[in-house]
Image (cartoon, rainbow, N blue to C red; front, side, top):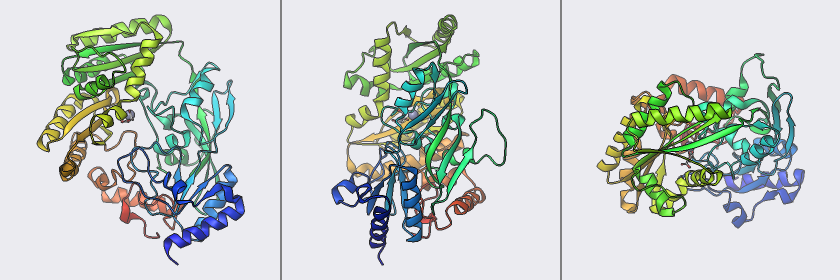
Length: 468
Ligand code: MLT
Ligand code: ZN
């Protein structure tokens, strides 16, 4: 039987088990599950299961495994590396409708949530209880917690608070084949057995499908203050980041935007960025009110010493909101400014940020591409964007991306800080990891998914999974 027919047979059987309304085969509906927010071309699956309960997930993975049909798990589809693209066809298993907030336990500072819950909604719910869930990918109004955990998402606050992995105490998951697993713990401490929770976080949907997440919360910081440090070049802004850290400060946010990124923000007219700035740092400090003022002042001094033209402190909550709206929209603003864009999320040691920005610009220039760099400079995590309008430049873009990836690794960095390897960066995995390490990870994958059916093609590349 052909692969697509096999998938449709499996879909029909899943429909009989969980209810046909939860299984889509209509071409138009199914097509809306073909892509994500990366630049990887979409692939239309044979069918989509819109799971509403963990039992639906079990049934899907059991039946798909019996029929040897590939399954691509999908949260909200906001991923940036092609992780939710059903590259091998088969079924998409969408968990967006398994989305309850099951519990906020204030005394133990834990939230129990289902994977389809929108991240921003969890923020609002826990903040109303005086608690805080720090991971804040910029798509927080639309991304889902299950996807955040699958990708080990970061975001601007990772500089102070760390990434998603640091907030996942445990989870419930279903393996390809339909076996349920409880992994980890609901206590703050716990060292029983191997830390499989840490393995599942960031596994990009290749090991299991999550059905419940046990998340660690922290107290909500009483005050947050925001400042913009304006610079006449990105290198100076990069040096200011290192100076802030060297001064012993830990702002919650240290975001850098270069000239091209500022141009995109200005073009959208969303927030007035003074014309004298050709680069800026968005700095945020949170904590007790008195300390916040002091820390922001010291960060401003460090910026001035590193060559800031001016440091502006946001006076009103509305100014802060406008700044964040502009920052969160930046990727879309860049997309609006050029016909084509490819965005990466390399990380280099933070002291190498100025050099990385300059060398990325050189790579762009050599290949006739516009470069915009912005991102979580405090972590050395840069969103390096190549932008172009002439489609004939595509081969140049491929070469530029390859050079960028090699350079990030040569400079002591890594391919991806938060978006994952997915399909987009799979061709470059061997730049960073040895053949032995890659092989060991493939073996780990095979323990959980011996037939290679769960999210095939991701991390290890298209030839990595024989079964489908
Ligand atoms: C961001 O920081 O804005 C996102 O991680 C990536 C993006 O939208 O480019
Ligand atoms: Zn980011």
